[in-house]
Length: 283
Length: 303
Image 1: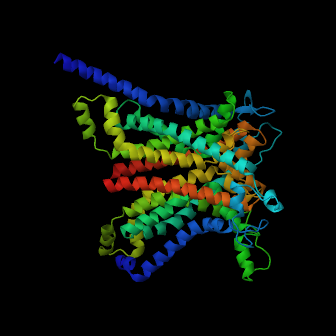
Image 2: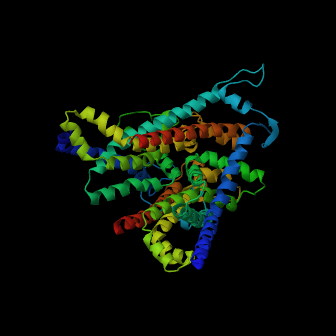
Image 3: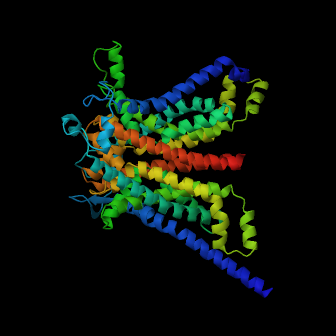
């Protein structure tokens, strides 16, 4: 009976309708930002007063000199460029370091057995289980106490700490699904561990390594909470910059900036998901 | 023979060196920048706050006493305000778990029954907002809920209300925002367990005379329980300490543990008190993870 209910037309249509509502719940709020980023009204963002590209223009070339409103309601392109540069630098450096560390760890855990392995497993999960705010303030206390000056470097160190675990998980999944006979054959034929790694293991886990790097990159780029505590005065990232803008009030330029960041994140995420999809297809 | 034995020995020692080299970086990073900071935070949580931030090296358990209820001395009375905030945060996190679950469970069945091609597309669409910046997702709800926001504009435009409704700065607004940002966290583990559900078992249940409700309670729910547990855990953890959603959607009217921790670090500069609060919410999380692991192990043994 339940099977008949589950496959009957009414049930299916109900389910489909709910599914569309679910997707709408996820996307409509984001769509709203996109829509209103083209609204020329500088005072009330959601009161439509005409179509304009001005808010995007304020990001790249700055506000028109004659238009008082635009100048008052927007940050300068130089300032935006600086925080975007900071964010990209941090995300690239931190995820590159984390990719090396996470991959090495995945190799150790996946290809070796040793005493204390379970302890390491627990330790590697811990940074993902601890709430962001706890990690953020623990790092703040540590950096201040140890005499580090809060800067881009402390942000990178903080990001590497939790990104390594994410890379480890992604690469481990790839390693676990890999056939070890090729590695054994390579070793039997007299190749050293380094040669075997470079010629056999690395090419095979490469999609996992790339996926881990992209995941790390996007998490680092989007991180708000941990960065919020360990960024010093001179080291602002794009999310912290947007946070500060939002605290001063809603401005249409934030919508335009949000749309650009959203599109960029989606592009990176889509590339990562595509890499993962390719892996599934090949097996 | 001797040569083979020697090379086997050198292979073993080379492997040991490789292992040490592979594990060294993560040990260094997690040791220096994770375990030691957590350790220092634990020490700070029982020290006296310094006058201008920092700490005095004096044993001072009153940081916990202020929250959990033992007074500093005979003259002061216990003020339950912090305890109430802590319990409120727990309640909010639990409601967020329930809200995301109710939203995602039917959606997981919707996706699981799709033909493969469309399934991949819809999964992709559901995963994508996961990568949108937290602030941008909150910003979207600011556009929706503000007195001059989208919902009020639509309602006023339709003539349904004269005065804008007060939708922001309430517990409900915080809950909505929290559910919105954490929905993908719940969906993915739920979907993973719903997709594995064997339709044959549902048919067997109905052949054996169970009705729809019985099949749901006795077959579907237990079989998807691991996904529900996993989803609940990874929604609960970020919901408990979040301070950004309450600060934008709750304003000063809604006090949560996260906002309290943030303020004791960046405004009132009472670091030991903030550390004590942070350790308390970490205690909840660790306890839940341990319970989850224990249940998972028991289920594994039973099977």
